[in-house]
Image (cartoon, rainbow, N blue to C red; front, side):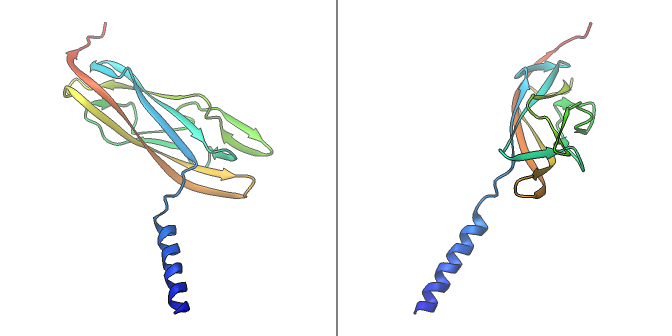
Length: 158
């Protein structure tokens, strides 16, 4: 009977470990400015990144921001690296990491074919996080989304 009870407890503990969500070292608050857009209007995606205490985000091997395909928004590129976005780096104790204190702004133009209404932009950031105290590094990705509204009118460029 004791073996059965121990086996049951071990199975329950294993179940909890498997279903526990892994905590991401990078949290993303995303928005689109302005939130209400007209066709052919320029705007920007604003990403505010919060890195967990004791963690740094390395510029190498890669820091990449990707957007899911969107019929409403047109970006100059499919993905953006830290150097594309001119994110500053900091060197401390021989380690180089990204300075993510300032919001990241990525420009776009609203398509002239955009449908009127509410939309959501999806994306993800691929990064390499390191903990100098615990002596580990982890390649990971964090997803984000931002909602926006498109109007029917077209803004004419001068």
